[in-house]
Length: 243
Image 1: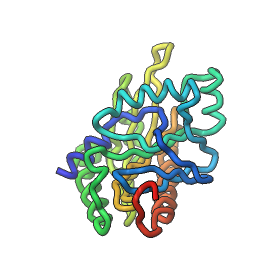
Image 2: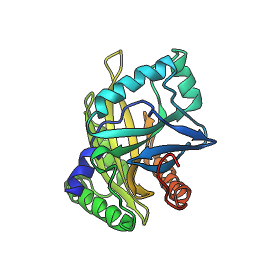
Image 3: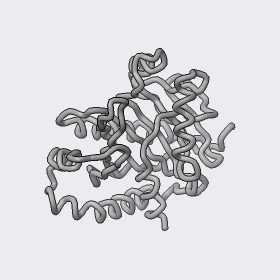
Image 4: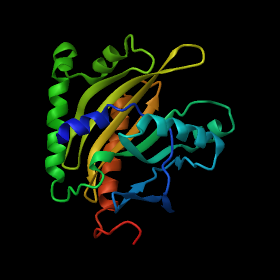
């Protein structure tokens, strides 16, 4: 049951938006996840979307509709310069952004002491789903991305399979096709991790539009470093939210 719930959450198409009820402390955002405080890190060069901004508020409406009943968006950041362009109407797109989400059905379940089991179970299940893809194009991730990108449609999402695994997380990727006003398909590459922070399963995403060759390796390194930093930030003594 756990692996099916996790897979359903991973298959949700990423949306642009910001979570509510965030408490900013420097570069740390403290959020309430099922009554427990989880610390999320704002990456260098990224800014948090703000629901008081009109452009951000419009984006948040999209998030609410897309994630309703399945996932909860905990944090959304974007490259600061890119976000400024969106707010002044110079562009409609976020090109480089990050998200943190939680599966609603698991947000109150305590996984302290089960971190390794969660990572292993998620990766094992995702690898079984990616076996057919690897048989077809082999283990070369660049070829896999090129193969999956061919003919990808608007609002279509294709999974890259497991990219890596370590003691802190299972790392996987996705390709998405997004529509443009000109009718063209805009490619979005995402790399994300399933990890456990303060006993709560959290998904940490990083996305790049119109990816160049080698982009997945860069994003994977960024996400792995982010997971390590998040584990460290949440290693303090567990405390209830609001305390």
